[in-house]
Image (tube, rainbow, N blue to C red; front, side, top):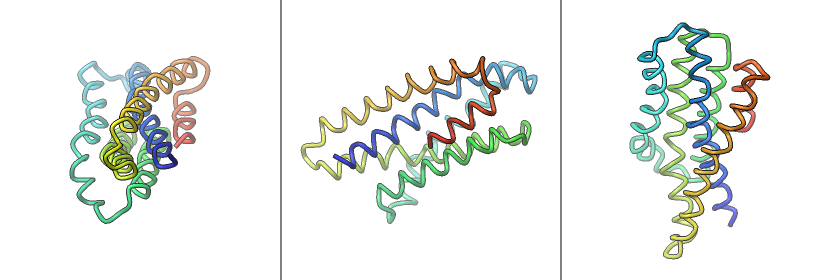
Amino acid sequence: MRSLLAACLAHALHDGYTDGLYAFLPVWQAQFGLSYAALALIRALYSGTMGGLQLPADRLLRGVSARSALILSTLIASTGLLVVALPFGFAGLCVGLIVAGAGSSIQHPRGSMLVADSYGRASRRPLGIYNFSGDLGKALLPALVAVLLPILAWRAVLGLMVALG
């Protein structure tokens, strides 16, 4: 049960990070004077890194326990978002999104593995719960960001996202 809870919390957080970044796009467009094409490229830095590194990251961390890999993934993703939140300009934004995407790339395969290994043949239902937790994160964290952005500076909102990690 603890493994499922840990995997679900990590999945909700990382999927929340992924979709929560959409709320920042108009702010970054204004802050850095970006075109729509540039915004798409910015977004691709995170999602492309996250998607493209899932298999290589899983292979690289084969000798690391799934729990340790989830901790590492959250630490890396949060560090990337911290870089984005710091006043390093456009270059910091880009580097931070790549680092955060790399961290989130670890979470998906290793979280699923943790649940499957913990429940064995009976993992079908727990894997469904694990997948649903990602959907909850996709709903809750972007909504929280959208509520906070008109009240707080965008860097402070990102700092709160980092603190969740």
